Image (cartoon, rainbow over all chains, first blue to last red; front, side, top):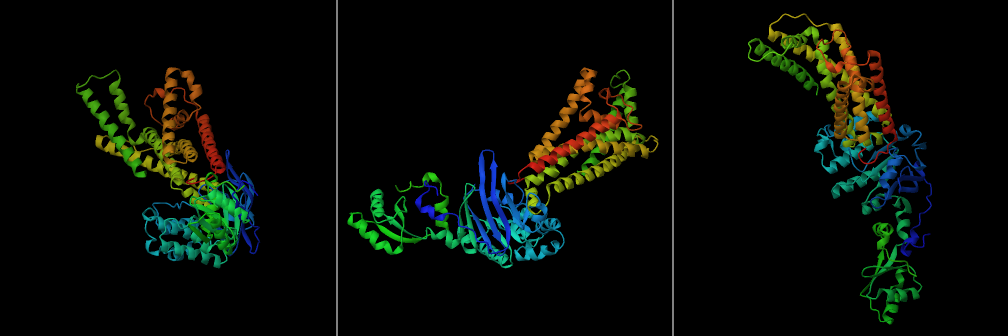
Length: 328
Length: 269
């Protein structure tokens, strides 16, 4: 455990992944360095059939680089990536035959229609893929605009076409990098439902997204990475459990208040602009209030909070410079 | 682009014919003074425009246009895949990098074949139009000689296409591929011509470049132009030219393949 890490973060150590499904994606100690910059640092990822795994992290955390390595677009500096049991560096074409991937920037030929673009991708996907073009256009709500040129598509339509292209191969593993970008709330909801459907069809889904509320709804497990390192993993409940219950205390004299709370045996205290965030049993609210008041520290508010994935994500990934020093 | 070569080839024939014919008339009527041997040279130029000389003059026109246009086309054909991000999309859907480059090179080679065929046909069309305008009788084209010249022309275009492919792969940009390809094309040809005009011994050096070998191969076709061309001095022999152009093609494509395989494909390409 890194002692320099804020105390409130320490309970988010990566959990051991219990293999419950046939694994369709497995990376082992995946590393990628670009010159002196380490984009991905010893990353272990597993995705099983029928589960949706969220890959979370701030911009530049290494999500797209990880996906690039999984797809053989980027050569790892070290480590391995196996897709459907095949090493991507050795049997890339075989491995990707069972993978549908949508990259963060959806790119197709601008002068071709949506249908023709899917047909072009289907030609790479072998027998049967061409027959899926029209059903997929319909499934993604693009049947009416299938003949329109790709360059005339809105961002949301481009995203839908990108998602449709991932399913041409009838894949065992679907990789989606920010699939809800540009979609309106109704479109986002549809995509989330589709993702759950994909898992229901016994496909593994690796979902990289910034939309944490949505991730929380669809993912069975999440992996949080920062600066290329896995800093938390597990089910949503597991990841949010460590910071699940805390008090948001609004108080003026923060150092003194912190000292008093440490006297109550509370160790996980974090300074905020308005006061303190304190990890403690929700039943201890009255005790905290009494202790502060007896020291003539009158809190404006003592609010029990339950961490959402977004709270945890923000805690985990905020820049070190803005975090408070650990309690001494 | 294919229509452009047809229009350009016919247009150049007409332009040269009308220009030379006008000068010839002016010399004959005494409107302008005739330089020594000028009338004979102009008559010789007009003879080069006839259908039986297409394998020489016509093929050289197509060669000049073709090198330029194929550099532009090849760089666009490959560079746009990076610009649009479709190279990344194709790879993510299981396409191999070698297969991608192979398909691109094959389609470029087929395109060049169509380009040469249409270009030569356009040159023949231009020669017939010019002959019809002049009202002179002319013998028909030597199909065998034209086929031989077309085959040589096709071969000389391949290294330029390979060069444009290499630059487009390296720069991941159609614009950069076109610009760098054209700069190299003009610079190399100009430098070679200047050096040889300064000192013929420099031919030993510049004969390892593209332009001199391409020129040697095209001029080596049976029954090519009889117009005096000072830049043709000291050209390499046919065998060497074919070997060097082939080597350039292979090296450019091998480098493009190596670059494509070894590169990490991030956003765009």
